[in-house]
Figure (spheres, rainbow, N blue to C red):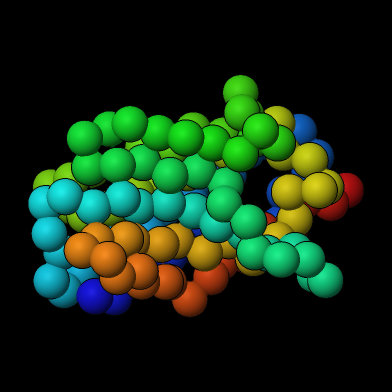
Amino acid sequence: VQLQASGGGLVQPGGSLRLSCAASGSIFSINTMGWYRQAPGKQREMVARIASGGSTNYADSVKGRFTISRDNAKNTVYLQMNSLKPEDTALYYCNLAQLGSSYWGQGTLVTVSS
């Protein structure tokens, strides 16, 4: 399984970005895809996850600002990030979990700064 993330960049506080992550390889129909992030000097944390059936969960820090979605036909997960704050600055990693295994993308950098 390979995961290719894209969409990171530099944005001003209050701005928006949309991350995408495409999965390829042996993808099973039942899985969970998600986004995690790691800021400098901090541990990696879960941002948002979405199951193949559509159920979602979010970190409290992003609720109401970020929206996760997926296109099962394309094995792609998206993260729409609105009202970005400087504390959202981090490397964002996509993840796919299936059949007891977990796969990670390469990370895409999001920098929120004026």
